Length: 96
Image (cartoon, rainbow, N blue to C red; front, side, top):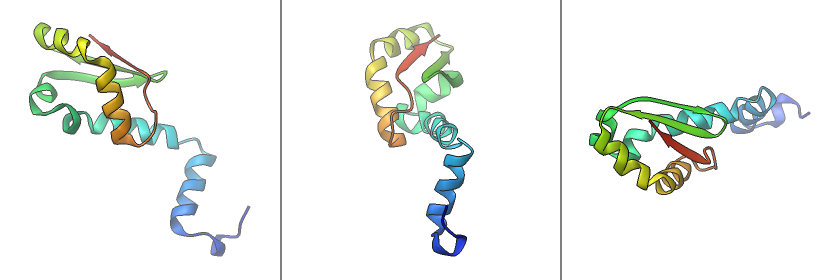
């Protein structure tokens, strides 16, 4: 391990995240928070719950029509959210 004086702040934070395995949780949080920006205001307003478990994003919406439309675009949603996060955080989107 390097001495603290030899690390930049970015390297020190990255090492801390890797050591305590927080980097995956941070990316998951980034995906959940970017849902509104990626999907738009209308979809965001009808979303009641979002959470990630085992690389699957669970989305709960309050509109049957919207649920149907989103189910057709699950792969595109997954790709867009992973692109926003900058890593493959989710592999599947499940819409309820």
